Image 1 (cartoon, rainbow, N blue to C red):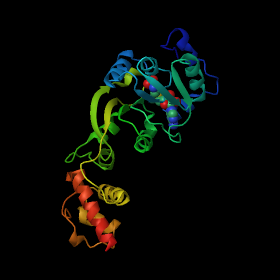
Image 2 (tube, rainbow, N blue to C red):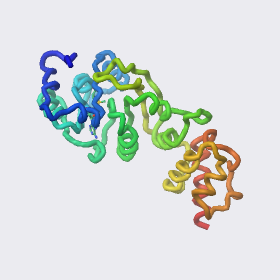
Image 3 (cartoon, rainbow, N blue to C red):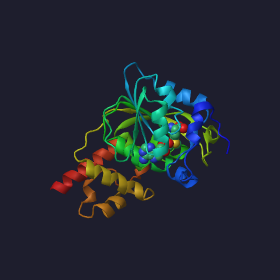
Image 4 (cartoon, rainbow, N blue to C red):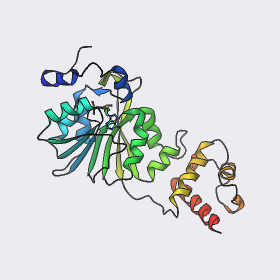
Amino acid sequence: MTSPLQGEDRRFDSAPAHHSRRKQKMLGQNFLIDSNISKKIVSLAEIQKGEKILEIGPGRGALTELLVSKGNLQAIEKDKWLSVVLKQKFKDNAEIIEGDILTWEVPPVDVIVANLPYSISSPILFRLFNYDWNRAILMFQEEFANRLVAKPGSKIYGRLSVMANHYVDTKKLFKVSKTAFQPQPKIHSQVVKLVRREPDYVLDDFNTFEKVVRSIFTHRRKKIRNCIKLSFPDIDVQKLNYMDLRAEILQPSEIAELSNSIFALKLE
Ligand code: SAM
């Protein structure tokens, strides 16, 4: 395959033979080749002077080369070969870490920018929620992004939407065609902005909330009463609100209220 990259960036192509197509697939390596998209993503991150930036999966540096001039950049790349080339290319301007975002201890940063490996978008996102950052501009598969930002009443509002809403406000920014990547993925992508904030409710017990969310969305066509009976057999559902409804119309704050009531009954 002919590389669309020119000059020194062709170093990214000279990976050893064992750097197979299979490995590229496993690491979700669909590289951005449309520089207008890279520019748009970095511009929408609205990075202020001196801010700390984290890039996850810099790959061939399509976003990295724009981010280096914006602030104090750390970038973590799992692919050993790519991280060696990135270290050479950005040696004085960015800290390139060869590592796995799923095990790395994320330092406090202001902004996260990433075109994420799609197969592990969800574990990456929920791991990031355990760390300290202010906003993130992330590219996901379109279908995942739609579920992430979905609101009550929508058919795709579910566990992902409610659990993400616990940590962030979400906003879809723009869609990216599969032709913007090499190799091309099978489906389109979507860039989403996430902003950290406190939820508009107070939880008495996070584990109960997680269990309630899983329970009511696993059988989303069932009435909430039947879901709760299955997951919390010792709880008297007569004492709870929302039992005749279905999960997809409940606001996150109403699910939190339900979770707090269940937790209180468990303590009785
Ligand atoms: N940012 C580049 C771009 O936009 O062209 C590459 C994006 S590509 C979709 C995802 C990148 O994440 C790849 O470079 C891949 O090697 C890297 N990656 C995959 N799994 C990773 C992990 N667990 N931790 C860190 N990087 C990972």
